[in-house]
Image (tube, rainbow, N blue to C red):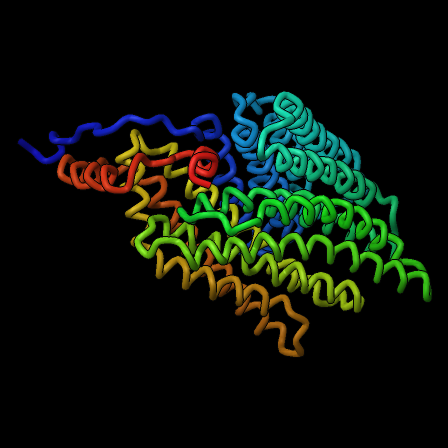
Length: 454
């Protein structure tokens, strides 16, 4: 009998991420397109603006909307509600925003109406997600992790605030130094207020679950209080950044106030980030998920570094360093987090049963040294290329392309093995079943694992 004829399913177990299977595919596709535009730079229509917005509005927003509902339901032990309407609205809005820029290569006056409509549609999708989260939380007010869902709601509210600023920028309401100030506020509300606060709140429970370790003592209590202040801080920072366009002492005071607001977020990021590092250091030496674990640990460390660097840059008004900080935040933190989520959930939904999902994870772990090295050097190169260092433009271009190239290789390796359809053979399945017996039933849902084990 041929070896392929010996294939058989070995253990059942539906993945709780099946509901977001389509989102993972769309997010991965949009991330690939954003990567192509990042590599192409100014040679492709839309250039850097389109690459950044394809990532932030595409994979980032889609995954936040999908997984905040999925995880939020788990946190309050409720049945997840379908995010289909919200996701369709977000997807339609992304196309409405991106297509005009891709056609002309820049935003012109005739496209401002399209930008406004696109921003409105995306925001409507995010607000539909907010309504869904609020219903989940109201249905289980006494749940242990209901406060995380409340933080998700506030992060969604920050999106509406940031989207309004983005629409006003696209419509040409701001000009001169007020445009630059409003643009900084828009970026901070979207990256720190929406994505950053959602990420920090999720890492409280989901981080240890992805690392296959235990939560640091008392982190939940401290993170809950710190994140509440962080939400307020981002709002204060947004107002301060806009008002930093004022002349003289008034602008300086507004800038310092903005830095103080961002310090509240940095404090929350530090509490949670250090807790994740504690989990990574204290987990079992033989724990699975090394590839995903390396991404999660990198996110925790770089998140703390980026948050405090942002405080210093804003306090000093060192705006020329914002591009380097943006590279660290977008690539080092958010893209790393996206890679961890897509790889973890993708390996789960593409596995036919628990055993196949386990073996898929083991194949991914074999790449750990190479993906970790490529990602580390790639992030460092992109940050260096954006730093305002007095060197030739050619040097910045070469280093930037090196960084993007290395990240492309790492992403291709992860995507290739995550999507690999290589079947599981009977002999391999038997070994995996023995491992299941030793370690215990695989908790394919990280939220379920967090509730049961933490």
